[in-house]
Amino acid sequence: MIINKFLQIFSEEYVNSKSTKKLIEFTKKTLPSDGTDKIFIGCVLIMFNMGFNGPAACREYLVSIVKAGKEKIGNTNLLYFYVERITTNKLVAKYLKNINKDVDFEKHVDLVIEYLEQFSFDFVADIKRSYDKKLKEYVK
Figure (cartoon, rainbow, N blue to C red):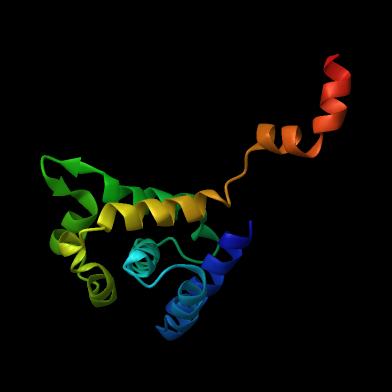
């Protein structure tokens, strides 16, 4: 998957040179700069800081982290809880520190999830899409 390759490239840059330049450039070209970008960058950095680097940096882990933004215990958002109470990484905090004040936070999370879901693999859908004509002839 192409997104996994990009995540691996961003991971190598982050781990080897403590830089996020490629990640930021990619995000500016790919996602809106309305808060959606910060969610994406912050969650990618969480993934890297949790040890999902190199080949382990993949779309599935990133989706799981982003989905924490949709989860609540009581009225506490789990992604915000992680940023405020668990992580000590300053870059993660830089991108996600004000998510509790973002009135469109859930919309931004949904947009990142929707973007990442474009890269998921669905064998059944692929067969139906790629072999629709043959499938219809076979089923007659």
